[in-house]
Length: 482
Image (cartoon, rainbow, N blue to C red; front, side):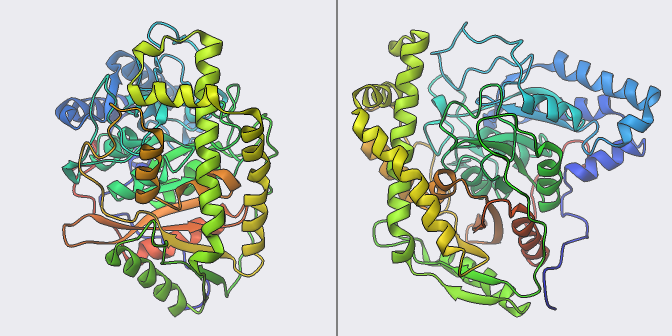
C-alpha cells in the first residue's frame, strides 16, 4: 500500500463522533447523554479529574440542544458534536458560567464567571454541552495535575500514576469515559503529555490556527495553544476543523496545507541524549511506527539527537523565562497575594520578577531562531517521528510543588518529556498517539511533528498508525456503554 490510508473503521470503545451519531439518530437525547456523563463523573470522583461540577448548567445546556433538535433540526444536524457532553479545563478559555481558577487559591473571588472567549463560542457552535472544569496544576506549572487546593488527579489506567499535566484532568476524564472528548491547552506539552499518559490522541495546533481571544492564549507570548484530548484521530481532526481559522488575534493564521504526497520523507529520532534518556521500550515503539510507515513506501530518514539538541535546550530556557515573567506580570498587575500560592508558584513569580530585561530579550530573540532551525530540518523531511515520553507515567507525587527549587522542577519535566517544548516555542504543530503498550499495560506513545499548517498530514499519518495499533480503552464512554 502506497501513500497514507485514513482509518474509516469504528473506534474501539467509541469516540465523540460515535456519541454524536447516536444522539443524532434519536437513540437517546442530549439530556440523557448529559445525565450519563454526570453520573459517571460522580461515580469516578476519586480519580480527581474534575475540580468543578455544575449539574444544573450541564442539564440546561443539554435541554437547549434538545429544543434545537426538535425545532431546528437542520441547524442541529450540521453541528459535528451536537449534544456531546464535555468539560473545560481549569486554565484557558474561559467558558461562560464556569469559574476558572487555574488550580490555585490565588484567583479566588477574582475571576468573572460570566467571562467568555472566542474559543468557548466555537465549542458551543460545534454542539458541545459543557458541565464542569477539569483539574490542572496550579497555573499550569507541572506535568502532573496535583494542585494543593485539590483534587489530586490520577491516571484511570493505573491510579497510582499521574495522568500528566497540565491538562491531566481532561485526559483522565476522557480515558475514564466520563466524557468522550475534553478541552485542553498546551504551552509546554500540556495537551500531548497527558494524552500520552492516558492512551489518548493529543494535537497541539500550529500557532495562530485556533482562536485565543480575547485573552490570546493565556498571555504567554504565543507559545500556548488550545484544542482537546480525544479518544480517536477522527475526533481530533473534527474538532480541529470545527475550531479552526479567523483567530482574530496577534498571530497570523497559518495557511493550511491539505496536499498529499504518495511518498513521504519521515525523519526518525529515537535517541534523546544522555541527559534525557528514553527507555528502550519507548524507543522501540517509535521504531515500530517508522517501520510500519516505511512498509507503506515512505522513506525513513534518521535524525541524530545532535541535530536537535541545541533547539531543544533553547526551547526549555525560553519556556522557563516566559512562564516566570508571565507569573511576575500577573502578580504585579492583579496585586496577587503570593502567600496563597504554592511554594513553587511563588518561586517562579520571584524568578520572573528578578529576570533581567536583557535575559528576557535574549529568550524572545532566540524564539524565531528555534523556528528557523526547525524549518530547515523540514527542508529535508516532511515530518518528524519521535518519542513523546522517556518513561511510563510516573507515580503520584513525582512533581512536588512544596519547594522553591525552580530549576529542579524544570529538570524533572525535561527528563520526562524532553521534546515537548520544541513545538510550543517554534509554533509548529505536533500530535501524540499510543502505538502499543508496555509490560504493565501502559501506553507507548509516539509524537509526530510537521511544518506549520500541516495538521492534515499529521492527522493522516496518525490515522494510519491508529488503524494498525488501535488502543483499546478499558473504560467505556458514558452513554455508549452497552
